[in-house]
Length: 288
Ligand code: UDH
Image 1 (cartoon, rainbow, N blue to C red):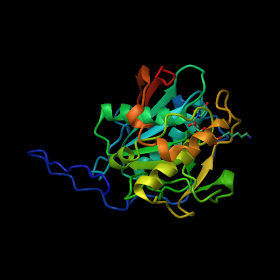
Image 2 (cartoon, rainbow, N blue to C red):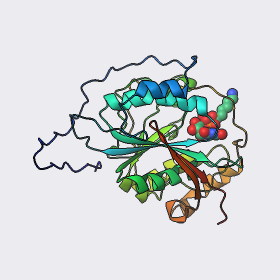
Image 3 (cartoon, rainbow, N blue to C red):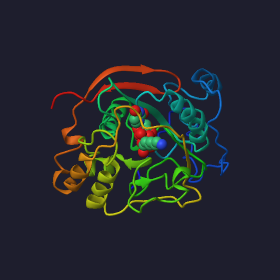
């Protein structure tokens, strides 16, 4: 079941209606360009008063059916974040989505752990509001069609099915990385992501196994609506491919209930809030 927001009416005021199933102002295919001099400051000025606070938005004229936390694992990709915000905030507003954007920044320059950052993002977002849906997005993934609705579905959702980098095709059937969504219940049922994938690779395939084990199937948009443009980049320092992850992935079936949200350990170093997003720095290298 998809997570629904309660529609409450306030005494004396005309109660708002639920937003329509299909948002009326969508544009369909979009032009996306990264070769620009875009700055976060310009994007902030452009966003003006459309965002209410800290990257949060709710449609002014209807009640969104879901309240969605968008979680971006992050370290040292400020240019990418600028492009992401520039394109995503207007899309999410056209989608009439009640949402908040949380950038989860890994503290220090130790080995990157994207999955742990996403688990921490889920926990931190829930401290801020009663989100019922969680979308995990790489910072370099921008949708090319706004009919790809950023919300939760009956099954965990894989949004980024046709990425330019992979010639707009799924590189393999079980791929479950890039941009995904889980209702609160779905995420708890799979015990979140594994915390044990350090460096690049494996954590998304591990999640696919978790989903198949507990929930049996995933959902996806079609390859027309699910098109994405990825910001090209070189491999980051301290996110090198980790061949040990193959072994960890092989052992997933046995470890999944012990390793995940239930065993998550991290500490928050700093939280800063601005009109575009909430930026939370976390230390994922805390001792077990
Ligand atoms: N991320 C960061 N900072 C890092 C590493 C990863 O913010 O230092 C986040 C970011 O949201 C990124 C996501 O983690 O989108 C996934 O990491 P990635 O972009 O490194 O993974 P991807 O598979 O690229 O997209 C792999 C490197 C390709 C190198 C190709 C060289 N030609």
